[in-house]
Structure formats: structure tokens, C-alpha cells
Length: 161
Image (cartoon, helix red, strand yellow):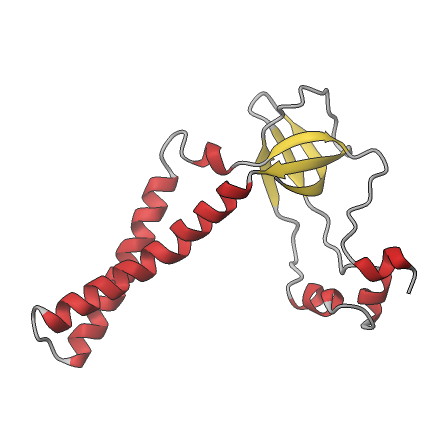
């Protein structure tokens, strides 16, 4: 199970709306002397905080501002990655190889067939992800309140070096 700390934004009967605070890693990483997490954090920093609807399996009464630990099954992350990345790329290769080998098409048409395969893969994923119940298997859940827990993001900070 992959765990991440988050802050509750809003509670509803559908679940808990949470956001993850941006972080640059530990203090050393933020100064540029650590593992590089600070540099990567500054490069990927977003203007607005992303919010996610998480399930509340813990059954705890949560309020806005509470810090919680979210959990996501390992297999959910792997299968979502395969679905989002490999399926469109596989369809792109299949379409371009089919155009090249079966139709003996020119290079421009092979490229167009590949782009059409890629777009078809993205379209299938988008349509499939909009179906009821499909996204539930990829939804994070609230495991527990984060009562003073630290994430242990950077080993250098814990060892004191």
C-alpha cells in the first residue's frame, strides 16, 4: 500500500475531498544540498493545489483542516500506469505496423496511422474511465488520522547529516 499525507478540504457523503501539501523534501533538499528533491519540487510546482475525492474507510468523523494518511493499493498504481501509457502506445504501434506491412503505405500514411492509433487509445481510456465504478478501484482511501507522523521523505534529514 502506498501511503501519503493529505489535508482534508471538505467532507461529504460521497467521501472526503483532500489535497496534498507541496513539499520540497527535507530542509537540506530545499537548500539544494540534499538528494535533489527540492530542485525537482520547484520544477514541478503547481499554481493551484490539486484536490482528490478519497473514500473514508476508516469511518472517522473528519473535518476540514484535519491531516490524514491516504492509501492507494500498489496494483492500482501499476494497472493505471499500464492502462494510461502502454495501451495507447501499443495501439499506435499496431496501427502503424498494420499500415506499413499490410497496406504497404508510404511513410506519411504510416505516421498518420500511428497518430490515429495513439488517439484511439487515449479515447478508449478516457471513455472507459468515465464509466460508473471504473474509477473506484483507483481511488485513494483515508486510512487514519496523521497524528504527528512524519513521512520520512529524505533519509538525510532523519540521520542528522
